[in-house]
Length: 275
Image (cartoon, rainbow, N blue to C red):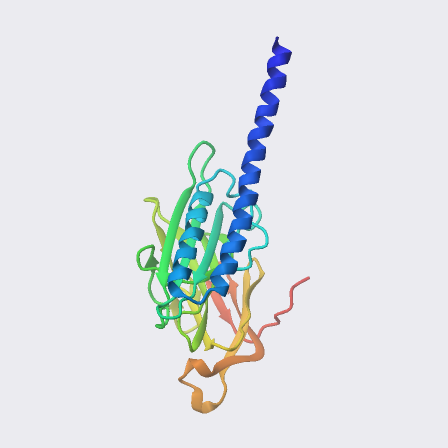
């Protein structure tokens, strides 16, 4: 009798796993179609309706038990960031509108202890042409909005924090890249910014780079302790005070993590990987 019961239970378990896997495949295909429609549709009302469908799928997905073990394939316009062994995952995308400010959507999922539910933060923010400030913190309610494309975890004074790398298209004339600090409080709140960046003349809560919207700028982790980026200069001396006329000059600067826990600005570094 025990053998018969065992043979019945195993197919049921396998069947449940197959259902979950098939649901994720179906969601991936549907999201691919929705993002394709979002890009190719020029009516704002249609785009908003399509985006609402995307949000509904992602809302369910981030609540699932498999969110840390699964990744949607073939989704060019959906950011899914989770370094190996990370206890944090970021999902993000943006909605571009023709007759209204665009929107950013970002989910921070923090992995819980076994038996507990993951902590989920759902953030939205409209495109904002104003610059992101560097001398203060932001919270979930006043988040500036950005697309994050990489992050790493660190520890300072026995507190965990994450360095985020992001890009902001909120100003039609100026693109921005951002190095920010993410922390979680004991009260389950999220905070952006920490006074960790030293330029030699000032201390900043984050670093913000502004340059021409039709230009390109590199900003990346070279190592776990080095963030390297293009040095930006004006196209001509007359454009010194106008960031929409800034671009790379083919030299590189970096923020280097010091033993003190601060990130120190270093000018004109070798940007090649240490390997």
